Image 1 (cartoon, rainbow, N blue to C red):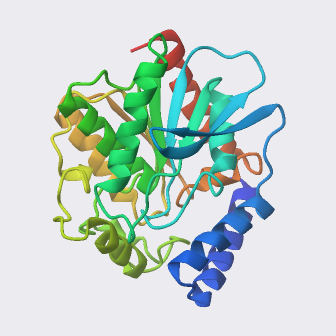
Image 2 (image 1 turned 90 degrees about the horizontal axis):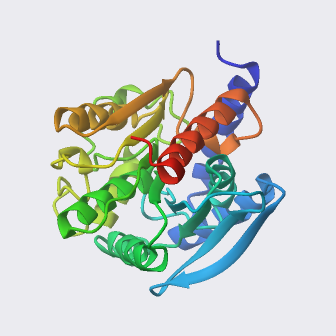
Length: 304
């Protein structure tokens, strides 16, 4: 049964996001406002060290739990429709995943559209992953991401496979955006339920800004249409009320059809990246705990 707290947070989120949309802020101001709100609304957990860094010219932050942890490393790619988001906006959720996986986690500020369209963000992620392989030769490296960051994590895994690099130990995807053509049925059928995407205008504009002159169905832009064979073990968490629900469902089906191991968990009554509220209601806590355990099992123990 869905918790009462999650229902309350759903309604509060819907109201707050509707108010934010009415501001109609230009992208630069929207980015700054999202960072200010994130720092105000979300507290960092205790016993966690934050270390600013630059890897291959890409800025980011290491989030390191102070408690004993293994040698595993998680590369986290934030969401924000490829035009918003940063280590600051996603620091809280990423830190909780670091603690849950008992691993050092690196969250990076990959380049954003429209200033830097595809493949800039993917190139940044690939540069960082390649550098991590060299810096941590004895460690397993997993990749995680939410929303657009989930789609980017999948695109990164495809590029890693095609370039012949050592693959990630696992992929953990939170409500990934995998179809930028916006052709999946729930993009419209779930719009009235989704606090983030009550219509397709934002996603269509963001997709165009990110893709620029590249076709929307390019496999590194919309991984739903890619050859999904020989990918790492993948855990996908998605909510019932998401416009991007079909993105996760069709991704899991496509991976299984291509022989890759993909597990999809559908959370009743949940909305886009509800895990943002980890520590505040049960469903968010359960999802982060399960994602963390999945990552820990693969990167620290090498489980299949």
